[in-house]
Image (cartoon, rainbow, N blue to C red; front, side, top):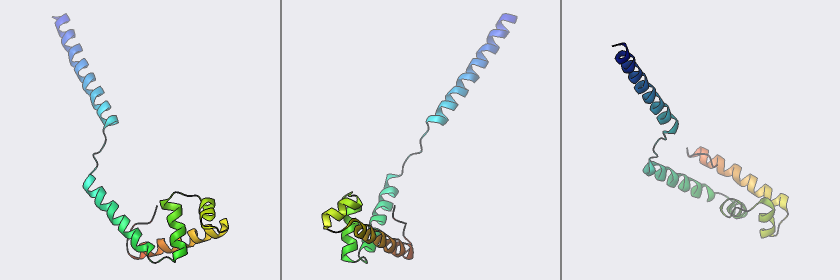
Amino acid sequence: MTLAHRRAVDRLRADASRKERDDTWGRRNWSAGVDEVSEAVLARQEAADVRAAMAVLSPLQHQAISLAYFSHLTYNEVAEHLGIPAPTAKTRIRDGMKKLRAVIEATGGTEPR
């Protein structure tokens, strides 16, 4: 009887240990699902906010920011593309970004990243 009792206790401990390992693994490897519909709606709204804010920029600021952010050019590449000094390109982008931030914050949108 002692052997049967010890075997039963060992089996119970093994089952409890296996359950604990499974729970730990599940907690480590669990990823929250993404609500693709709400993500798409938020992305469209952010894009609309940015497009509306871009409309208030001067043509020079609009062009510099478009090249920097949408064409992924550096300050120096923007300056070279526009044929202007690098500090001028930096100033146009910086001033334009300040104006964008102010417009988006005033309309209750999200800040540009």
